[in-house]
Structure formats: C-alpha cells, structure tokens
Length: 341
Image (cartoon, rainbow, N blue to C red; front, side, top):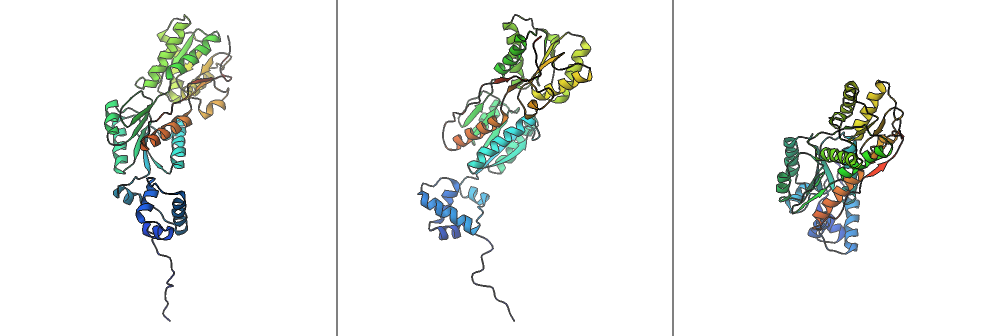
C-alpha cells in the first residue's frame, strides 16, 4: 500500500514569511524587529517572538546583512584567549552583548600588530557590526582608520576619533598606591619588576613607582628595577637575578599578579619567606590572588568590569549614543603578603 504524507506535516525549513503570517505582521516588520530597528507596539513584538518560538525559526545572519540589516555580531580582538586577566574581560564582554542580543566573535592578536590586523580583516569579512580591541599594538592611526568603517572600542589607550571610544585604566595611580603602601610599612629598598616596556600600561606603572619614591624622598635605584614580561616565568627570573646581584631589598612590587606569583616562587626556592623576609605587592587582583599562600596584596583592576564597560560602550556607539562609561579608579587590596618592618 502506497503511503501518503499528511498535509499538516511541518515544513523542513521555516522562513521569515511564515513567521510574518503566523504573527499577523508584514515580513519587513519581522525583519526590522529582528534587526532591532522596528518602531512598533510591544504587542506586535510579542506576537513575533511567540511565532519565532512556536515555529522554531532561526534567522539567517548572512541574509540579514545582505538585506542591509545588522549581523548582530561583534568582533573582539584580544591578545591571548588563555590570559587570566583578559579571559575574565572576555566573559564580561560576552555577558553584556548576550543580554543585548549580540554574539561576540573572538580572535587573538598575540601582541603582534600584523596578527591583530589579520584578525580585524577576518572579522570584517564576517560582517561584524563593530569591533572591540583589548589593548594590543595596532597604531592609533590604524584604529582611527578602522573607525571610519565601523564603530570601534579600544582599551588601554587614551584616544579620540569619530565612532571610536577608548577606555583607559589609571595605571600610574595604581602603581603609586602599591609603592606608597610599602613605603608606609617602613620599606625603603623596594624592588620593582616591570612589565613589557612596549606596553603603555607598563610604562605608566614604572612612572607611578618612581613618583611614589620621589614623594617619600627615597632615591630611585636602577639596580632595583628588573625587567619582566607580565608572565610568571619572568617574575621568577627577575627575582633570581635580583638575589644573585646581592642588591639589598626588603620588598617587591610586581607590575602584575602573574609576575608576583613567580616572584613568590623564586623567593621560596631561595629559602626566603613572604612576608617575614620579603613583602610582595602585585597588580590586577586576579582570582588566584586571594587564594595563594600567603594571599597577595595587590591593586584591584577588574577585568570583568573592563569587559562590561567595553561592550556597553560599543552598544552605545551602535545606537548612535555617545558612550559615558568609565573604568573605576584603582584600589589597594591589602592581604597577607606585606608587613611592616
């Protein structure tokens, strides 16, 4: 016996026209609602939402872009997906964009301007509506040029241009606070592990360290300044070099928590205790800072808040609004890795 399909068998593909028919509005209205550009009553929006849910409609982002709408996607150029600091920032970006109906597309530039440009070219080919650049090494001119094509938010810089918004943390003040804390504890021989010198934030933190010393009347000693690269291993190597130099020191300020973790390990290997023999202060307040032994005194720089602010600023630009979000000022978080002499 020959079988026949029921006339009510659901179609294999749900179209925008079907959503329009079920919700009682025109296809163009459905399209505008999906793109976030419709000026219609809440009743119509609710009807479209119900039809989409009932039919299981999945919008085609490519078709929407070709039709002149938005892709509802945002490109994010980070430097390393596995970075303890920037990884938290990515979560903040995702959190805010998701609530607004946008999807983030992540790419890593690896602190290389050519790689960052390649990431941006790839993201633009995906027709993203805007781009967030987490610090990086692209030139200011390159970012200004990019902002002529689509909205851009960049962190870690002070930069102004149409359709571009920059978020910058007060690294100078954070470093000044960290050094001042050690000075108030009676320390005068304070070593400093720098970040990568090509990073503007590393330069500002060195300036803050020097400013605090100068304000306290403590002479700046180049022998107490050790190069670092913002990674744990560079903190280990810096402290080993410092100890081998036989330059006296009672405290260490590391330009980020990762190097502070490495510094603590190097001291442990050399039989020195924290804070009994050497006090340590970090910078960033990573999640692990409160749980290492001893818990690390550090400067709070919220990666999650950075991501949230960057995403909100981009949403403002996409909505033709002037962003007003600002990063909070640095705060000293005192834990058990420092003590008074």
